[in-house]
Length: 235
Image 1 (tube, rainbow, N blue to C red):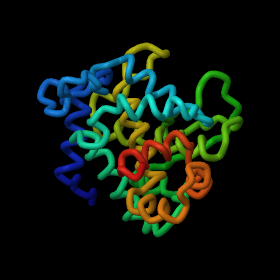
Image 2 (cartoon, helix red, strand yellow):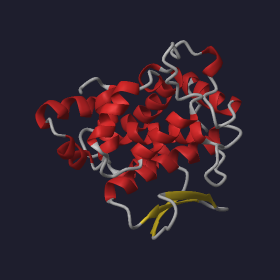
Image 3 (cartoon, rainbow, N blue to C red):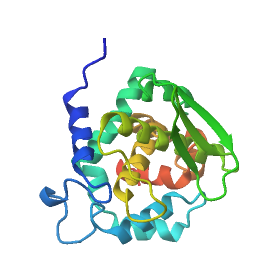
Image 4 (cartoon, rainbow, N blue to C red):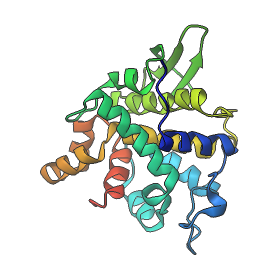
């Protein structure tokens, strides 16, 4: 018998179903926009710069300061981002995660036992991709990427699989245009939350106090680790 979807999770999928994929579906009623204009829900330039920064394996420290000055409130306090983090915590609890690094086999919990095959192949233009076959899902990872980057891509693609099964319309991925930009950001947020559980980051940071060592400990991209530390107000 299929498990009933919790109300909070149904709320998340209903938001994704009602949105256009390019903008935050809660933008019109959001109380966090304020006067700064730094809103991930509608600012395509900010979205693009944030995505580019996350995609860097060796982020420039000067860019860290710039993001700190212009960092929007929504990833920390926004309802839809909170629901995405709660989704990641559900899978971590199901998997019994006790310490870093989060194991790659969290995928078996994150996909609700859907059959998934992970393939590492040399890709020229993308970090990864996901395909639905008749009997399983296939996640392609770029074999030329570092293990940390591949792990980030893995959980990013898992979120696409979950969204395809739980929400309509499915995520739009047409070339490099505007479609799906906000949903892609949510997939990034989910991946970060999976790889860097709040409790484990809070426990490790006072002992490590070094961005590079934290990235090695969690096997996660440094840009992602910095955003996690920023979210938890540890830096």
